[in-house]
Image (tube, rainbow, N blue to C red):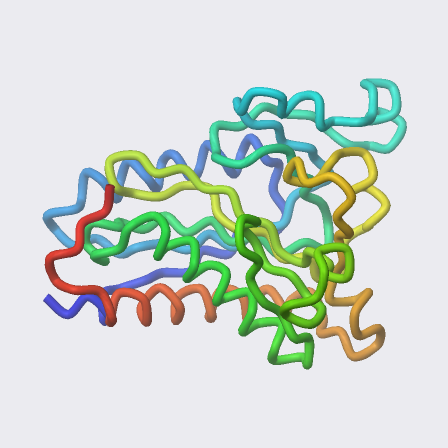
Length: 240
């Protein structure tokens, strides 16, 4: 089987409540698991959420929500629990989100390679508009600034949190195109104290692409990165 040439479909959801998008992810996940033998397409859901803070089941994650219920309501931000990995994060308008619903078994990818592929998609998207980005050891996601700089000299531009069930993925990655950055002050993003969150708009000003352009580029780069990762995976590789 040519792992790098499997069918992908991008599903454009527009702006959708977090709970509704999660329900749709679960539907797509079930269909992918059930259709594994038939080779049904992998999917990339492209979505934007109204303001929402999501909290995982990780011990101590709830403590990283700095705002109380009253402040969240005043700010127009919903608070929801989620079953993805990671810690606390914020989603809102101006943030491009991809939820790849893909079969790691068919792609021959482990979770580590899958996450690196998502990071690569964000790195390439930002590079298209002159924003240099990189990974940081021990801090999943994508950062801008000069690689090798001290942690406090870099800024997080994309966050990743995933779940894998029956070798198929849910949740995914959020790239900050032009969100309201002040909302990140309601939380400790990803549980990383003292780290700065940025956006494409904050980095390049008027050279920032439109939200639609950046979102479409992110979806395309996600598919390309997953195919590229599958192409270099040994046929014997198995997803955990």
